[in-house]
Length: 232
Image (cartoon, rainbow, N blue to C red; front, side):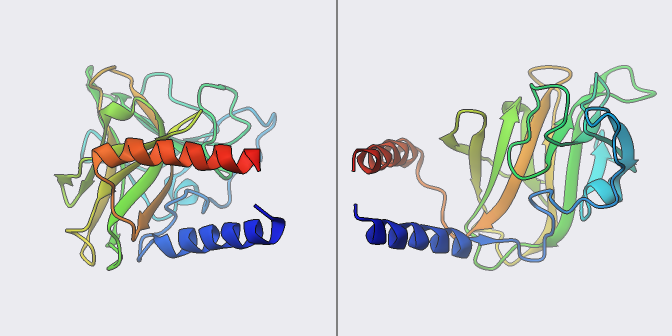
């Protein structure tokens, strides 16, 4: 493919991606809106910061109803039910930033005075874009223990693309587009009592979720196109 044609092709792809994304009145879906965070010394150290500063627009829930005001900054929970805001300086390499400057970790775990492990969630209430057909997000970890819900109704999600370090997942939201309600991501202690999932880059798309059989064909086709471009 000649250079001018390749530039036009890439430009069209970027334009399609821009048009496909929307937030409606939801905010900070990529978790890049953090502000007034402390300067850590050394940079790999951790701190507790206000939820409003770390994840503006979001609310934290422990065990379904307990609202928490603090989150772990630049670290992960050692067993407690908690939310973390990770950076590229996070000491534990098992929990890398999936995109941009920040990634959120939702950790199920123990919460006083309970001795059993409980789920942890983040949520916000707003309006689903009227053009939205799907909700997509990046995730890594105990993703099978993650639940996505809207107004208390769980929405099934599927793996759309497996990348080297994480997966891109999507769910059908065509029946709730244009509606106000609470969008919630909950990590449940199912396969592991201290399960954790890294979450990032949430966005609504005007593209529908492909049929499960089509997802594999799409991945194969994308690999073929990439191979052809490399050859040329």
